[in-house]
Length: 179
Image (cartoon, rainbow, N blue to C red):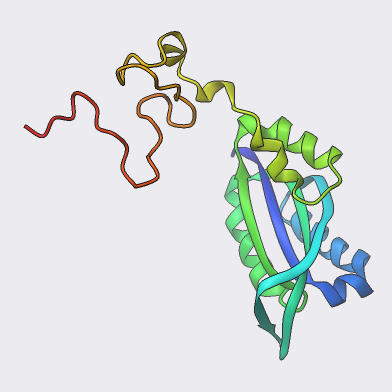
């Protein structure tokens, strides 16, 4: 059973978060630990107006408090935990979103989550960095050989094709002749 790193962003009722923050945090942590999660980083992320109103239990919510948790757990238990969040925490949990963190980004994401105190910390951790395994060594030595020179790509696409153009599809390869 593989143990993976996950990030879950919780959108909580901001009124309840303001009045009883420790109770809500403890409830979230208890629910995570009930499913075998090892919590690595947990913190308040931001409070802001949400894009659309959310109706829960005869109340319309116009803003929410974002709480982010990084944890490791058995990947087979993740769907059961998501179901538990949807069913048992409806009085204060408005939405939640869970993302699996690739093993290549684990250290960078956790370092940023622990040390950066401004909103948007998770995004800043990945803006300027590329994973060493995302670069195709063949394109480093001869960056434009496959595409007639001048192409400096190779990131995120594995070097096979250039990234798509703004208009849609990528340029054809020489061996993509329709004949």
